[in-house]
Amino acid sequence: MTSDTAPIRLFSGPLSMFGAKAQIAAHEKGLDFELIMVPFEMRRLYEPKHPEVVRINPKKQVPVLIHGDVEIFDSTQIFEYLEDLKPAPALWPASRAERAQARLIEHKSDEIYFPPIIRLMSLQDVLEDPVAIAAREITADFYEDMEETLGDSEFLAGSYSFADIAFYMAQLFGARMGAGMTDATPKLLQWRARMTERSAVRRVVGPMAAFLVSEGRPLPTFMADLAPSAAAT
Image 1 (cartoon, rainbow, N blue to C red):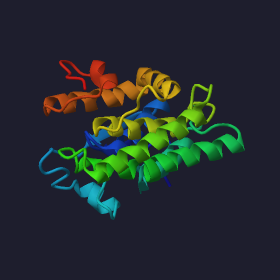
Image 2: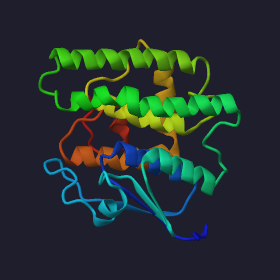
Image 3: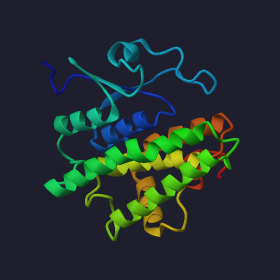
């Protein structure tokens, strides 16, 4: 049986959106954990695979969390485990309806918003390709939906939650791939600014920004102050 005092190891990668989600959540919880960055480079990506990641996750992807006898993968499953492990501060809202909303937003961020961003990753040299245009249209519609969802609240599901973490990291990759937010969603832009100022977010996104700069990659404007000598786009 796993003791709550057993060491926590979290495997992630310097450009892993899903790993970053788990990292931010662990920092928000104030957990003491060992962060293990698996081998990654732009040309070979995640090769060679880390043996612990291969052993635990059949998909051979980060994030992976080890806590004593517990070995799990997938950012959503890690979210749920961290919430059970340390209920306070809570990262799911208190009410049943808001929890359902937060879980839906987290799921939609991964499964509705992010697939078009993945398509854009291979179309950076042909952003006027019809497939790229269609992908950006899907993301623009999603931003409008999130603008309406946010309304006059500070966060997407009432209180700050995993939903905010998930969508923040997803839209970060959207901005990098040419599908960023615009002035059409001013409330969402303000939400992003609030998110970027959170200590846990900066602890994770800062190193990611520094890695991109070290690789000569441009940064979206909202990330520019998180890395030295950053070139914003």
